[in-house]
Length: 231
Image 1 (cartoon, rainbow, N blue to C red):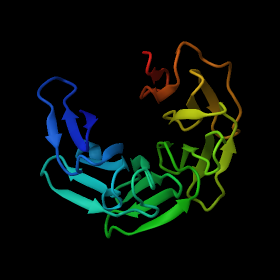
Image 2 (image 1 turned 90 degrees about the horizontal axis):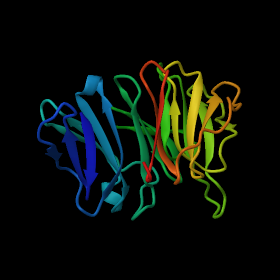
Image 3 (image 1 turned 90 degrees about the vertical axis):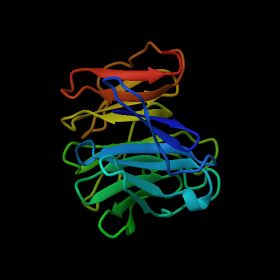
């Protein structure tokens, strides 16, 4: 299944065909910023990028029973775009990671709902490796005029490592092996990076006319897909 977003409402879309299913929860004042599936597709987590402070929460929906858990508000929550949640990922059975703009990466314990800071970077879009031991993500600078940056992070207490990238990466993906990073830039190009060394692999991949808003590897890691407003 896929997910569609509209005015605070989630739409569960069967990829094999059939009627979309509306999932209530957020008000029309909120715009959904991140979604993630967990537990083999049984759970769906969603959080807003814009809206009232009291709605800067993560809603976890059980797609089998229809039950919903509400976690938060998360650290950094504020009115409007303050504390936007731009990334979510289940990290094992008992933990959810959320990236909060201006705050960083937050770990949420699904057993008791408690949350703690993991790192100040990244605070926007991110992706975890296959064993959830490391990840890559985009950080939005607090200083106006500075470009977005790309970071590699782990959960061993080490400081997140800044990776050379486009001047402004707008999307990021980690291949299934965890060895390579793909980033999509606001300049319309896609680049590959060695996840360990942070060095570029090959030339920029061109083809888009506008900024790249999504990149993804195939499950076998042999193909890379990119998406933009133009195609």
